[in-house]
Amino acid sequence: MRFFFIRVLDVMLALIGLIVFSPLIVAAMVAVWWQDGFSPFYVAKRAGRGERPFEMVKLRSMVKNADRTGVASTSNTDMRITRVGHLIRRYKLDEITQLWNVLKGDMSLVGPRPNVLQAVANYSSEEKKLLTVRPGITDLASIVFSDEGEILRGSSDPDLLYEQIIRPWKSRLGLFYVENRSILLNIRLIFMTIIALVNKPAALDGVHRILVKSNADPKLIDVARRDKPLLAFPPPGMVDIVQSHHAS
Image (cartoon, rainbow, N blue to C red; front, top):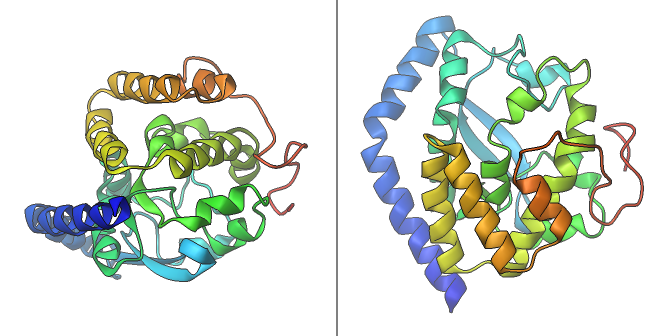
């Protein structure tokens, strides 16, 4: 029954969000189209619940066909990001259009972020549990690693760096959510996601309280504080640090 109420909350808030933000979405669409004359949308194929692929709708922040370069992770210095795209990414405008996917039932407002099919194929058996729920627009990891582009800034191999220092903790935070999800947790995470846009330290404090109260892994609690450099670590269910972003 609680999952039914989560879905009801998803639909209600997605409808309200699309209506409220429609002027902003239209303005961003015009700006993206004006800069290069191509579609303002980027339709990304992602793995959904049960590993079923779906098409996630995003406002395009990169040059056309940027995904054909084979680089999945993006740093803030990525030359593929357009001038308008930097603004879209800074204010998370590319996430708003995903409310359409929430209405369709592909996604939830809160849940592990959907990943590309190639990355999911390399999941450990433990990480596969992330695919037992609908992927979301936001979650604990979205708050903790909202500065992902900055973390990867200047890396000669952002995909590998992502696999070594971000994926291990994003997956663990996602698994924590899967094991503890509830309508109350969803509401708290939606609220903290909004707070993170203007006061990330306050949002991180909220994440810390959730993890501590639920007796999460002390290592995860420590990393989620984001007050120390991120170190390479094996993904959950694996014993070795990833040495290649093509490794399984």
